[in-house]
Every structure is written in C-alpha cells, then in structure tokens.
Length: 318
Image (cartoon, rainbow, N blue to C red; front, side):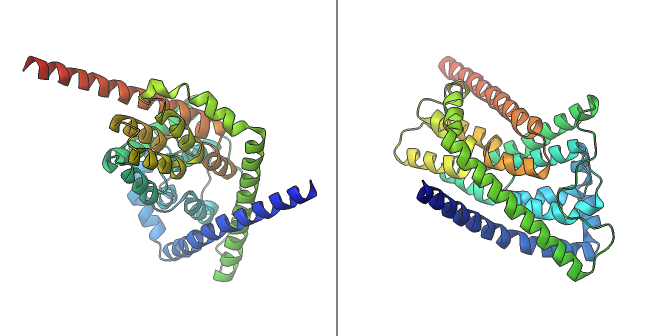
C-alpha cells in the first residue's frame, strides 16, 4: 500500500513538473512581451482594436489580448496575460465566466487545427465554427447574466495584483508568484483527475454520453471516440480518429460531425477545471457549453441532411 502511494506520488510529481515546464516555456515569454507592450502603451492601442468584438460579448477591450493569446498559444498563455493585466480591471464574476467560456471554445488553434486537418476535416469550417460559436455563446451568456442579474458581484482576486505601478524587479516577483499559483493549480487538477479516474467518474461520463451521440450524426464507431475527445481533449480524440480514418472505419460525414462537436466542446474535465480555478462558474463554462454545443451540432446535422435530400431529389429529376 505504501509503495503504491509512493509510486502514485512520484507519477503525479513527474506529470506536474512536465506540464509546468511546458507552461513556463509558454508563459514566461508571453508575460515579458505583455510587460513590454504595457510599458510602450500598446495595451491601450490593442484594446481599442479589439474593443468592438469584446464589447459585443460584454467584456473590456483589454481582455481581447487575453483571448487572442489563448487562441494562438494555450489556455495557460491566456492565464498568463490575464494575471499580468488583472490589476487594472474591475471585473464581475459574469465577465470572468464569459472570458473563460470564450477561451474554452477557441484556444490552441494552431495545434488543434493541425490535428483536425490530419483527420481530413476542412480547416476553415472548423475555424468559423469555433470562433462563431464562441462569440454567439458568449453574447447570449453575457446578456442572460445581465438580464437575470446573475454573477454580477465583483470577481475575487486570484492572482497577485498591484495597486500601483511596479518597477521591473517588483513586477518580476509578482509574476513568479502568479506562475507558482498556476503550478499549484496544475497539481490540484492532475490530482483531481486521478481521483476521478480511480472513482470511475470518467468512465461514467463516457457511458452517459455514448448513447446520445448517434443522434448527432455519429455511428457506433465514432461516438465512443468523440466522447473521449469531449472529455479529455482534441489531442486524444483526434489521434483516435486519425487511426480510424487510416483503417477506413469511419465515413467522411461522421468524421466531420465528430470533429465539429469536439471543436466546440472538448476538454470537459481538465480545461474546465483550469477555467474554474480562474474564476469561471460551472453553469457557464461547463453545462451551458455542453447544451449549446449539442444544439448547434444537432442543427448543423439536420441542415446537412435536408440539403443532401434536396440535392438528391434534384439529381433524380434531372
């Protein structure tokens, strides 16, 4: 028993270090770049460029840089910029939840789109689906929160923030504290994931979702794989689909429907926990995201079926 606990602890520590090292390689350059942009006054300029889009989803323009960073790098990169900018923003819980939802819909695009491309899925429809889905969902979520006066209290301060302008050494110390906090969050999430796996919660989620997905244009072979991608991430689900494509076991339409659903709704456990730690509410970053994604894919599948039916009738007439 003691040896098993020791092995588990070592494995957890190793995974935490490996994940944290990847985080440090991404976040440190981003934090330095953000500091340079801040000192040059470029944050204000960038905020003005992004203000119309961010205003549409109820967020200040400065948060556009957070989302853009998450899209081009990872969620950790977005968190790094958020930590650097948090001191100058007075956000509500609803606004943090909307930001977290936007990042969950669209992040790590260069990596995840390359995975989608390897499955044979056209890239541009997936890009439009993720960005369009993010804006539409966050617009509705923001308006619902304001309309029903939900989560309008000030968001709690998670990262170390400054009440006055810091010199370079003070800023460096603050960012080291923020990175340390993110590493602690990573450790807690990895530990929680292990607990969920041991308790069989992840297997239960797979069993609950698998019977539902055939109604969204996926057969028996595609549904379980899609569930894996939804729960664990596109990297896992996409790799499985690439293998199935090579074996010729999935139809093209199934591949597209599967990747489209995973594009909108993936990383339901780890990514969601990360954004929950940032301050997002589960109602907005998990349950609402799942419902929205299933509704969108259901509509797209039905529209595709109707279009295919009309095209077939037209070909028969000709």
